[in-house]
Image (cartoon, rainbow, N blue to C red; front, side, top):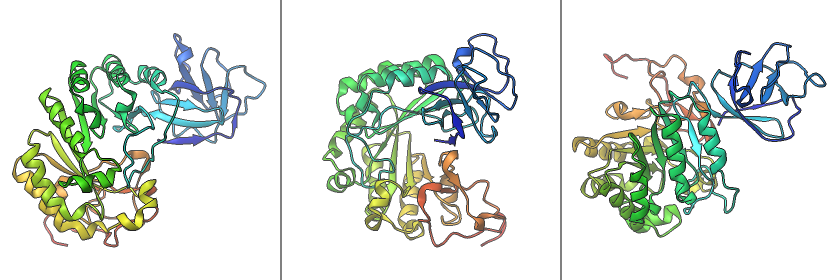
Length: 378
């Protein structure tokens, strides 16, 4: 998530609030955090973020920052006791998420955010967070860790999103294991959300390979979870992270998906983010994305030719063969999506997914600027 570091902080407790840039909220000021360059000190706000030193001038918690250009009306932020400002909802973003838990029942060898064993329950905090989201939000993700680790509280989160953001589509990132319990799958369906999709990873058509990658013997539970969700008419997406241990069997996996899960809404093949456990295990995982283009192309076209919606996530268009570029989506969260100097002047930059800022220079050696238009060849 996007973060801003403070210069000074008078806050003695963690604060959650909605950003306003104008002192115009007559009612319910206590839910707002005023962000301002003005020296005036209005009362009633949960906190004030200012470029001025307000020490001794106000009893309202305040934070001093260098500038306020990162803030927008309607953002929702959390201010820690250390003065760190975390953006939990950005009004201009299309990739806002609710972080359900950091716990997980898998330990995937390429996980960018390794799970924790214990933590304080976040559900009440998340329910209050969702109440501050913009009512017109179009899409909200639920992620972790593994969201189903919070049990039935997951459905409380879904219902609160449904109430606070009635137009929003919901995407849940889950390993699908919990949905092998048909009663749990039934409870999800009972939420009766108008546009909810569960995105579940599957890494191989061979159970032992999938199990090795996720660090648990759960392949068949994931498969059962997929069938249970399909039985209740839920939208399902499949995700395949590509690395040295998955790329060779991408065509076989695509064929397996077609024959066993023809009901899925979409399949996404994803370039790996090389942070967290992925960085720890890099020597066993890293392969230049250019070097698996043949396998990726065969898998994508196999599914597409059989009318299964297929995408390529996190990829750079200059590395993909032209046949795969129409399948590429800009899928990296805005706050960690970057481009390289070599990208300047590329005619496809506006359409390209860019790079993870967290990838620590683990990028393809085939990155190059494309200067051609659609009517010419590279």
